[in-house]
Amino acid sequence: MKKDIKFIVLLCVLLFGANTLIAQVNVNDLLKDIKKQFAPDSRIAICDLEATLSSDKWIIKGKVDNNNLKQNILQNLSQNNIQYIDSISVLEYTQKKPWAVVKLALASHRTAGKHAAEMATQTIMGTPVKILEYSGDWARVQGPDEYISYVPSNSLHKMTQIEFDNWRKSTRYIVTEYQTRLVEKPNSDKTVTDLVMGNILQYVSRDKDFIKLTTPDGREGYVHKSEVKELSKWVDQSFDAKKITKVAHRLMGHGYLWGGTTTKVTDCSGLVKVSYFANGIILHRDASQQALIGKRIEAKDWKDAKLGDLLFWGTKSGRVTHVGIYLKDGEYIHCSGRVKINSVDPNADNYLTTPFLSISRIEGEIGTRGITMVRDHKWYF
Image 1 (cartoon, one colour):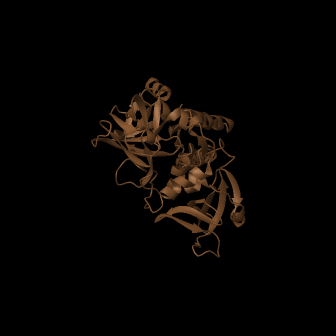
Image 2 (cartoon, rainbow, N blue to C red):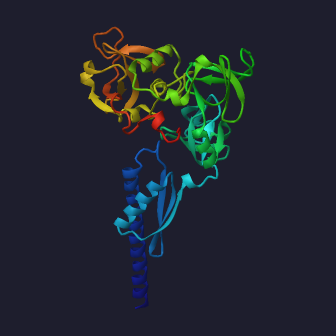
Image 3 (cartoon, rainbow, N blue to C red):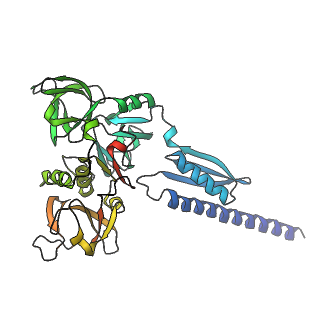
């Protein structure tokens, strides 16, 4: 009789444990489904969660990058009748100085907080970023294009909300020359810092043909007035495919660097971002993201493409791996090994055979997902 009782008790324990394990797997599967729905792209959203059972409730712990995402998660748990304890950390609320502006002409970002990690992207001086968390000497940040990456924290000038608001309201100038310098005095050869196209500095004063500017971390110097423009005037642009392709042409022959996103060096999608930013347009970072924005045109209809359209290539399975900017008569400019021109016309001498997947038109699509004018981005103004 005692043996039978022990067997029944053991069976109940095993069954309860198995049911608990199944339930735990189901709740974690639910979290995965929620992540697929609300944060499918880990390059622009953080949603690292797990569920553990405690008594009759589930402890949902981990971190997300914004409160809207957290509220969507909790709402879905409630709709699925999950009794939970909220232990989710929202990263955007964890920093005393939640904002920063890049203080170097260019800063290299990586996929993890270490120099040995893969380079993911670059940002340039005056780019506003949201600080999500720190990992040693690295900051995990989100840029205006929503891209999340790690950058050395000493590349940033960190700001409180009040300091950031004051920066947004200040008079700033943007560099319009491809590469130049901030010098100690007008016509001086002593460099304060190098500068690249798109760098944003705050205005100090004017001295005849030179503008006195200050970097985000307070280094002052001069740049010729022909190489900069007041930001509030510069942003007042309309779509200009000729300007976009002019910038791309100016970079002809420049080498390829994975993660490169400046007028010094780019990768394929970096060339697109740099060229479009010169027209005051912020695009998503990677080619596979850029392929999902704008008005889609089938690759077979390439003869309908217009100047400035984005062309995408990839694998036979349809995975996007490359992007270029359409010119005319089947030709496009892109960065592959170097910035160069090729054609999608099979009859052309410079035709490339890589699977041609699709075309995206940005013109007429400003303000839609992944396409934002600088003047409309609340981090700049």
